[in-house]
Image 1: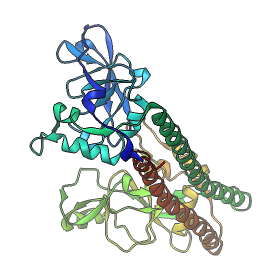
Image 2: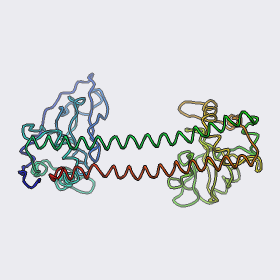
Image 3: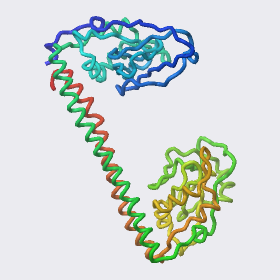
Image 4: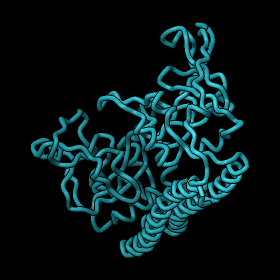
Amino acid sequence: MSRHWPKVRLGEVLRHSKEMAELQADTEYSEITVRLWGKGVIERGRVLGAEIAGNKRFVAREGQFIASRIDARNGAMGIVPAYLDGAVVTNDFPLFNIDAGRLLPVYFRWLSGTHGFVELCLLASEGTTNRVRLKEERFLALEISLPPLAEQRRIVTRIEALAAQIHEARSLRASAIAEAGGLVASSRNAVAKRLSLSHPQILLGDICDRITDGPHVSPRYVENGVPFISVRNISETGLDFTTAKYVSEKDHAEFSRKTNVEQGDVLYTKGGTTGVARRVDTTRQFSIWVHVALLKLKRGMAESGFVEHMLNSPQCKELAEAFTRGSSNRDLGLSRMAQIALALPPIAEQRRIVAELDALQAEVDSLKRHQADTAAELDALLPAILDRAFRGEL
């Protein structure tokens, strides 16, 4: 058990590194940053010495321990990887050489990622609300349990084996979600191809009474009012009002003179991310931005769910991409989107197809929710393993 391991102060196994480099204006340097909650030490970027304020920086070496003075209390610490040997940091990221004869760097990397160690770093930090900093003397005075090197190696081997299993489980779940999403797309495509063999192609503009878009001027947003939907609020699986901005009732009434969104209409993204369709299946009032097109379908001729599924099929997405203009300011113009063709069966068959594809989408959504719950469990598993490992219970 860990209670049998001797306690040592961090200052006994860590030594503050003060190696510095004189920066050369025409030399390129790697800069380091440290991600929160034990997510690792990474390269922030590469810059010329002339672009760095001041003419000196601390030099990081492979295997050193690095912490963020500001965010050590939020788990921003780790071990410098080999590819960042020689990178530079400011005094906001103190570096420490590890006495590898007593403390294995890889062991300390895992230990420093535990909730208990982060809590110690919080205790070693002080300052006002906006200026809390890790205090080096208090940090080096912290005590940790230090098992023999052989035990450290055994613990590391066990942790990394379990971490590999968790990583594999995450990968399998991500693959399952991707495959499930692909199943919906392939089913839509199969329907579109089958219909094209038995029904004539009809232009999108011919099944709409009107195709329009939102206001071409930036609205004045308010704290509370009517939701204002943009491209980011639209996906193939629904409308997300949680991140929507709001406009006043007066502006909404003005916008609705051109784009009166009603249940049974279809929204179609035309700016930025183009070619994503979603039926309006709510009676909630809202306005739309210029980058969103409103398709007013001819009722009795086209079902909104059917049009949504077909526009989201790979076949129609390719057409939408072909009709999109621009690189940085991508736009699927109203007149061009009206030229997108799709096969249109009788209304009864459209409804049958919608029921089948909706049922498939519901199964996929259920799988994604289950996978999200499982992912949360996996995220909690590794910290629990680390806590057990450093209590001597693994």
